[in-house]
Image (cartoon, rainbow, N blue to C red):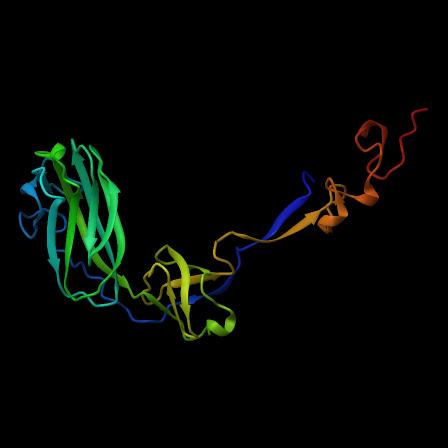
Length: 283
């Protein structure tokens, strides 16, 4: 044994696992011309000098939207109005952005007034990605830079491969598990293992769970709910002694050794057979 403790009881085992049996959502693409191959469908938002289709840069395909800032106002970018959203459902929103000689600001993704941002980047494509809940059947989808200071006057950035798709509802439903009766409570760690999403439990009934971050659930998604608020958290610790590797209690150990196995010659291994054993005969 190399030490006096071994952590053996972690939150690797889950309290509950199962399958979401709610509705199947329509995951059709809601953005028109998201790949920017057509010179249409994207209007100005904020302060721009120009908004054009360009072959100078492309994340995929041949074209992207080139947005040139005029240096005034507080933001500048492109916009498309989406319809046929379902109120209360979760949507995955994605766009790729790339700066060209930007002097500051952040790239923003905006759907339903809910913002996601990353720091500006020049010379490489970066992804904006988020999950948003629809609060109306129609929302403006914006991709823009903020702020647009005078330093960015005449400077451009590019947008490509924009997408908005429904990925589920914010409520996990499983009519077979009886969540509340089986000890599921608020603040436990929960995973949607199908979509690789995680959060903490917010509310619990026998059949339904909502989460702090409104993670999405589509029909057939699998889940795991853990025993604590953090996956892999230590729940309890077992102690073992250094002489034999036996399980024991911490208070029975002295420097990793059980008291009965201590030997005054333990630190002189050449003179003893082992802890608690008689000295070697050196005659």
